[in-house]
Length: 233
Image (cartoon, rainbow, N blue to C red; front, top):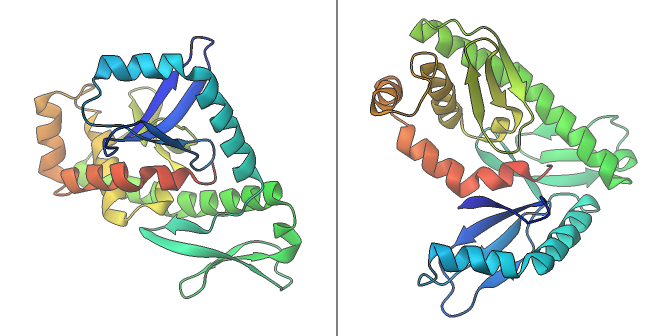
């Protein structure tokens, strides 16, 4: 489960929580500053919050170290359209990263020499793909369901997959380009249904389920793989 803790000084600590530890709480560095924490099942919610408060300094240090390490490393793989593909540095003269179904993501040496620049290029490549794929997909669902959002656009948010506002329209997180098409279908339908119901009431979920058969499967996929879509931050 992906979660977030705000320290007493206002700094946010991002982590994934698993109830799988037998005796002790285990903390490991994750990707891009997201910590992986295993907690014994018997630890209550109140005890967990107290533990976080007591260990803020240690967690902040680990998060900083994880962020620094990630900034200098090329991801081993990236998710694209529901599949995980390797990232490879290649000795050719291509000016931009490329994706090929059989080879994954190919990054020219000239770009890979600077990991900060390399990640920026990869983000831009995927963002461009998201514009070309996700927005038309959202528009198709809007036409199918006969909704007219005020606008459609991409979002760079770190805390939600989509957002719907009556006056500003719908924005999809560009990182959904890494998710399977049917997961994106669910997010599109979810946000469009907010045009009829601005909450998560039973009526809202009934409408969502009426228009997509993938609600539970998509939510499960995002819980299991969602954090991996943020590997480029």
